[in-house]
Image 1 (cartoon, rainbow, N blue to C red):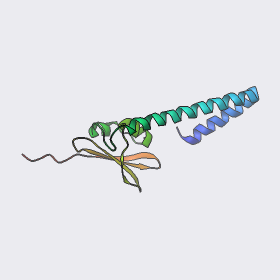
Image 2 (cartoon, helix red, strand yellow):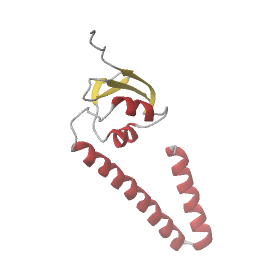
Image 3 (cartoon, one colour):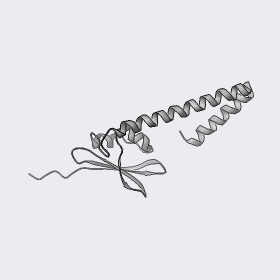
Image 4 (cartoon, rainbow, N blue to C red):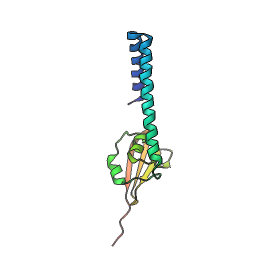
Length: 128
């Protein structure tokens, strides 16, 4: 969800709480907002804890990761998907990479905090 929309809805809820129930309504809405923020924080901590337990920049299958990626995903969603922190390739544009045991590599480019393009690179097979 767009943060502007989310905070806009929170503001509308605060106004509705005030108009309908007075200060008790505002307290209830603020409690709901704090609860929502705690859920988001808890989710982020869980994702990062799982990622910290895995080798940096490694994924089980780069091909499967490539198949699951969608335009517009955030880095947090990708880290939750890979269960591993990526290796930073470049800062401008923000580029991260994950590889698997077969030396296949997925390189992801984020623009404005969203996944915009990615590329799967597979090793050349040895000639027989």
